Image (cartoon, rainbow, N blue to C red; front, side, top):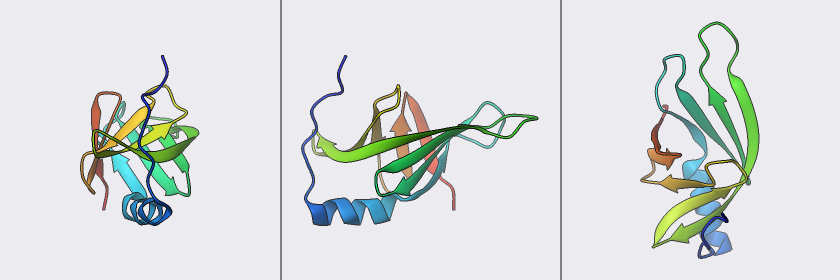
Length: 101
């Protein structure tokens, strides 16, 4: 089905959130874990940690919005919605991603 309709952010909010959330987030460092990189400006990168090979990488896009007052990123990827739990953690496809310093 379609992603739920998100309430739009103002340009100022969007720029502030973009700056605040740009970074690397991971479910963990071990093989099989997932990573999510918010590159900023509507671009993101998803990857999977592999034991032997280089990480498998997928590039995608996002748009900010709010769902029930909470900040989300609507993506063109299968999981559809990335929820910003706070500035340090995101939820995507049922997994929690923690920001990597």
